[in-house]
Amino acid sequence: MTIHATAIVDPKAEIGKDVTIGPFCIIGPEVTIGDGCQIENNVSIKGKTTLGQKNRIGSFCTLGFPAQDKTHRDDDGMTVIGDENDIREYVSVHRGTEKDRGITKIGNGNQIFVSSHFAHDTTVGDDCMLANCTTLAGHVTLGNRVVTGGFAGVHQFCRVGDFSMVGAMTAVYQDVTPYVICTGSRGKVYGLNIVGLKRAGLSDVEVTQAQNLYNQYFCSGLVPAQALGAIEKLSDGSQVFERFINFIKASKRGIATMG
Image (cartoon, rainbow, N blue to C red):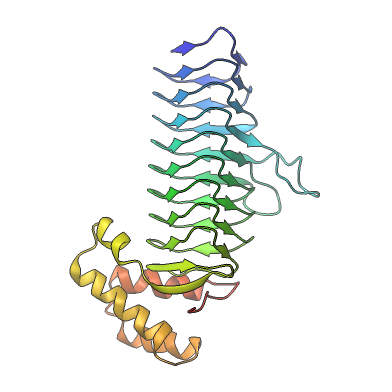
């Protein structure tokens, strides 16, 4: 363990093995940092915040700070960050609140680029790549292997499904289904994320299944409820089908439509 002389680490904080904490960092008493983490200079970590193993936290990040919420800014919520995340400079992650799950959670293996923001009660899955200034409002959920372009923003309570891509400067106001590309000032769907699906290791059969789902739901001319019913009849019970169907059934904000 290496802690720079100018860092302030509360003696009650739990620091794992082979952790490096750089100059001018502040680590609070309820913080847990797992083995092999690298904390660059001027990082502040507060509240009930837990980092897993082998995370890299870039300069000037703030983790576990209170929610930007007038009614819940002082809630005693939690922030949980998994393993092997690369969190770059100036990223902010705010802790959960009592109005929701009480936890803000980031999974494993994510790349989170400069100046991105994760508001209270957000949840991010695994292996996502979120470009500079990606902004998630409170209660947002991102699935696994989601990709965002720079300055993408997601409205409160919206969800973005597995293997989807949100384009640069896109504002997401409704749920984005798995497998698609969403872009534009009002977040419309413009096709299947074929490159992302292949990079994620989906087979040709699975990509074809996803394309059939897309065609049926977005391009058949049926209203959403009818399109979902038709997909359920076609479902072979595979994960590709069930992921898509279950996502739509759980939607509360509605599904982003075609552009």
